[in-house]
Length: 102
Image 1 (cartoon, rainbow, N blue to C red):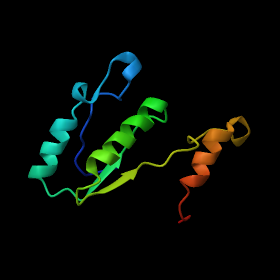
Image 2: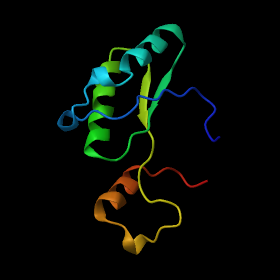
Image 3: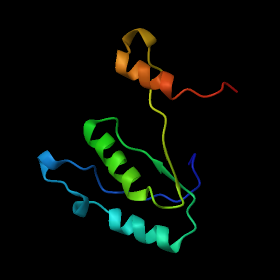
Image 4: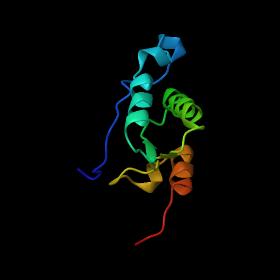
């Protein structure tokens, strides 16, 4: 309910080790939507895993010659968590994803 735009679900992440290739996901349908609709921004919301990062990179490369902004949701600390229990990688991502305090 926090985002009022269009959603496109790929149906998973690329994973050569599991046999999941681009043809197994809905990249083609996304590209068709881009041809038909006036989309200005693609917001990537992938799990912070190797497969999620590989899928985001693939999408970024697929869209690089299009007139569309590619952004990614912030990563970092979940609400209600304790800073003391956070690993260094999550803390680094939280710092990189920071934004102005309102």
